[in-house]
Length: 207
Figure (tube, helix red, strand yellow):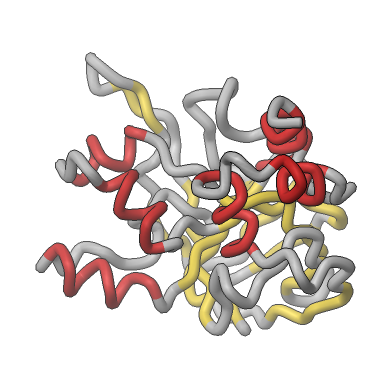
């Protein structure tokens, strides 16, 4: 498992919408703080950013599927607005609460799956992109920063702890978006102490 690429971006005003979803790859080291990567901005602080969603990660392996399905070669690292494009991991192999070390010092913890928003669809001009992301399970996941430090493309990831091996990102997505009439599953997922506060609140409404 390693960082295939690292991306940051700034909020941009396009007149009818403001977004920071356009990320560009950086080659040198970047410092990671509790609220995210230095130089990276959040346009919508209500739904993005904060300590539970400081860093967005995405599986590098998904991009070959997006390129093939859209016939567009622009789908590369950062195309989903993520900060970290990771080789060797995806939603079926990452679990809520996983604690990962990146490079020599940085330690992060998986807090929740990423919930795609309309801005990705607008960026790519694909009206049903949000539905397609959810249906395929290629959502990505958010990380909170436990230990700050510098990271660079090519850094390796080491799993330090996995407290909930039964709660993969894929399973969490299934409960949140598809198994909406099962309060028992909602309660079980919401009970994970490492799950983001916003997901705990949303799930609690079901029970």
